[in-house]
Length: 416
Image 1 (cartoon, rainbow, N blue to C red):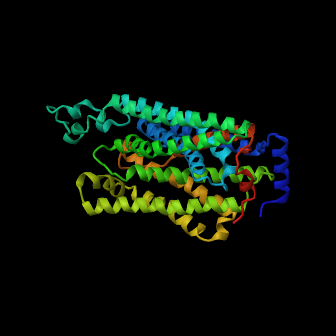
Image 2 (tube, rainbow, N blue to C red):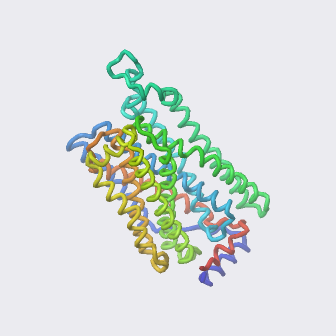
Image 3 (cartoon, rainbow, N blue to C red):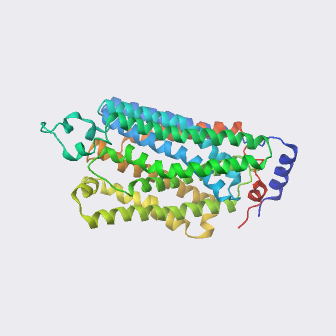
């Protein structure tokens, strides 16, 4: 049952039309700043010791910028789905998911710059961007790449990436604009407009994101193709985003006792994570079995690189962290209502899905032999700490509740 003191305080806040702002302990910021500084130090140590290879640097830049771009996209995806489904339990989480959207321009810009520079300097996407591959007189001529040249050429590739990012930014801008009106005016038509744009976004996003994943990641190895790959990345986005928002919400609750989040909301988030972890492994196994069954050389080469080139150890760790940990730790209801257990599962998933993206990207950039060293750890620590510092700073400046939302009181009193 919702805490009576919390409900009383929030009712007073709604009646008096005042802002309910969060406070984050300075120790949290100190830890994040230390993590960011440690990340820079690890990169510097690697540079002094062995030097940082340019393809390794860009591989990690692509991994982390892609990862945190899709996590920031989770904000609008979660927000839109809750509006479309008219869910009441998640209303107190809407403003937190809304803050993810503010980070989208930062990480998407970093991703775009990495892609453009990597493409035109032949550090990334060199398996199809080399002109010699298209010259029938050249010894390097590749018939498959030549046939795909209509789709895989530098200009069209960059135009597609920019269009994807702009489409999503447009919906983020419109939903943010409508949300600001919802915070000020208690009018049902703003709720309906938000519902309309949320439905439009989900329709557009469902088509464009799989294509975006194919362009950014699958085209690193252009001989390989999988129709499931885009949906695999969409499931990765959803689980990673759920893990981030759960950790963030628990952190906010730990620093603000009056925040109405409780074990009932936690149970719903953990159930989401449990269900979609099963969906993720289902997509993973389905893709493997279909390619194994068809036995087409151009398709199995992707798995040969990863299973025979040393990545198989990471593949096993990937399945343990992203499926076995959430499955066994969240299968019981009392575990899903435990803050510590859910936090540990979310940390496993955040690290595990970073590893998942590493397995997808690294072989196409640095080759068969992997090395998770100081560059990989340091780069992730920098992006991770930057993400949390920016989002926590933003959360401290806003009203944490969508106070004009018609289902807010139901969300506060949510009980299962």
